[in-house]
Image (cartoon, rainbow, N blue to C red; front, side, top):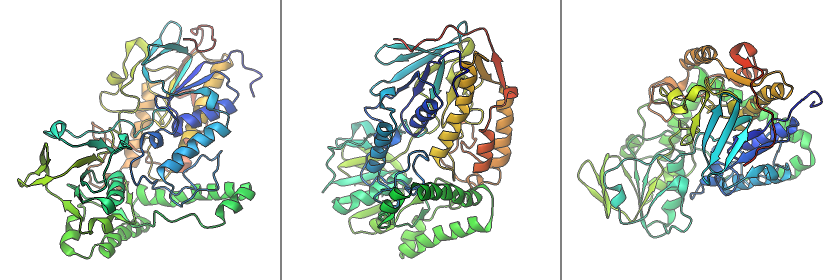
Length: 500
């Protein structure tokens, strides 16, 4: 209800991916009318807008990788392709009436808090300034590409392309292609490019466990028609899948027979598909399955064993204008270099320059790594919240569900502001420290903590994941606890619409 509200908050949401779209939906459903979403890309979708490399496929089944409030019955495949997911995000925005809130091609470069007025000033790359009462950072995790520091890479004579910034005009057919990177992206792009390459070399220093799955399997015929006619059944299916994800939570969060079963399946996937013992040994990781972000593919091992494919396990020494030289002195001639080297996963809102209370910068606050109370709030940054912020990546919980829980939680604080109960809302350092003590304790028995080096680790050596189950997340994000926050009144300037 909005009847008791005495003022309309000016809300800026930064980012129009899963988190930003969810935040916009939740806020408008709660009755807030002054919501502006700023997106630096030319369309919505976040990671699904920026990534469009060959073979891009979601490794989460389509029927759970969707917004609970915007079900899609007619996915073409059990595991949807990237382009289909991006189109889904655009369709959701259009059908939900959110298009008018979203400004694309607007990159935010800074956000500054005014202690006197409790307002935020957001500045864009074009020099526009926008004043707001609340800033919600929905900038995602997999955003800034990680470019490896390899001697001579800039001197390579042919194309060098990162998968997160793929050039659709790039010609790869009939070329000698080098692929660097062994995560899901590397596996997918190797599988997609190998059939038409003159030669494909996958440079693999640390192999991954790859679970076999028929990733190109079409959705069961009749599913779209059934779920489209029976939305209640569709909602029940989605809820059932959320419940079923709890089984996988048990797999990753604590040692159990379920974990052993999945790990044995990973080992079987390798043994069954790679019969050559020497090649199999080179593809066998030295850590437990599931310790890193699990890779799923039904084609990768097969692609690597084709005559035009080669696995190189030696470390890369340097790049020459015509190829890649490995530590054993061998130069591998290539025409194209594909960097499937992932992202700087812990940048979150960077490279934006964010300055909070008393001139505190985000870089100063996060000198030891990113931290946010229950994924949502940062000490020293009043009236600023994160949607899918630090610790939001999970091993078992739908990101869409996590984003919706977070947005509803934040909406409750904004509602208190709108009713005049508070002007300045800031989480305490003590509450944040307590949350991270709980995170550290819960992280102990997780599979991510069993001895591998993954992108989950921050610079300070902590694991940036959610180590709790879905019910714990729902409990923590149900209702804000005022005891964990410092709230003030009588400091806010009169509110109006965001103005340039």
